[in-house]
Image (cartoon, rainbow over all chains, first blue to last red; front, side, top):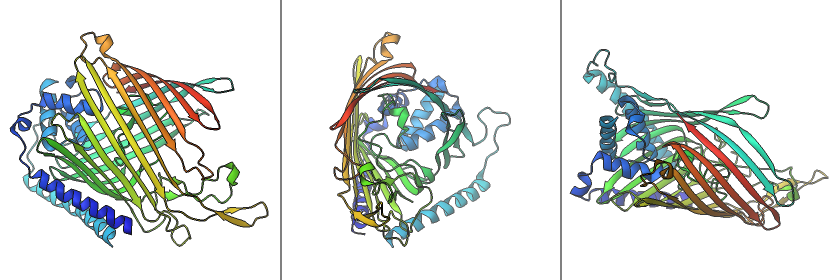
Length: 89
Length: 395
């Protein structure tokens, strides 16, 4: 029980800090990043960046939801990368 | 009480939000374009993978032995039901030594979007643990998969439960998190195997499906990407299980804590891309007097300090920016690691050290052909040298 209280306290503190940090303004340079740039930066974190022609529009929709969860992409990143892949396939 | 409250809140949320969403969709659904290739809300991707391997093992002092491994086939249907609901499924089919095939179940997770940075999920899932587990594992492993790092794989895996996760931008940095509750691991009680033959009592079975007690496991993963280009990632993950033994038995209150720190960094010094990846794992199980049967059918007990750790660190080099298509598809990787088991446990022993060198050629962006060489050393045991050729064919 001692461990569980410590862990839960830590998690709550981290969440509180995260929410505060989340309130930080996102710099304009981050907001202005293109889908192509985010595609290169985020895909290469874990694996080779795929060719946009690999999948159809609908398939990219499903694939990007998968990567949102597996790669912990933000909502903005998912939207921009998905649009880039759809436009480029 | 706190755990039950959290689990109750999560479960309530999982039931209520999809219901509200389905009502809202009934009221506002628009008519899809007839015969449009992109019509309809449901989007499906049905990728798969097949793994084939040849492995040659040379144990010091004996003749080497090589064998082709049977194919393993994976099916990974991904279904985006609508903008809020997503289903992630993974199953495999392995060929046995007698030619028969055994189906396996890897993941079945339902995700529901509550906010852009908060997703609810439930089902059978691979929790994020360290820098590989739960991250598409083999897909992200650049060292072949002939021999897994000895310093990992002793933590949280194959959980059945519910949780929350998400990611958000915080200034130039990015933060992600996962918090879940699941059945958790179960302690292995082995009262028959003699101590001299490696009695297994005190080890954890991480792949338990049905819980053996009322207490639940709590797991977490917090990740931080400090730079705006997401090229450095550090995370801290773990799981705590207050009870791992069967309810009503003396083993009930044996608890287990696992934790891991992971690091992943890559950078393109054009045309060379380098990557550094590492992980440190710690495992601690509470002490207990385990019974063991003697030859005269009486029982004695033994105990040990059930605490151990493991680690690995590796680097890769690839001419990713080369204009030569042939050269840019090669990647060279080297990794060192160790497992330090509980020295006084019957199943423990002295530390195992591992050195790995791998040369990979990418036939396609997602089809690596790896040539891997591992050396495993342990005090008092013969050195093992293992050569593996692994092909991941994805489709």
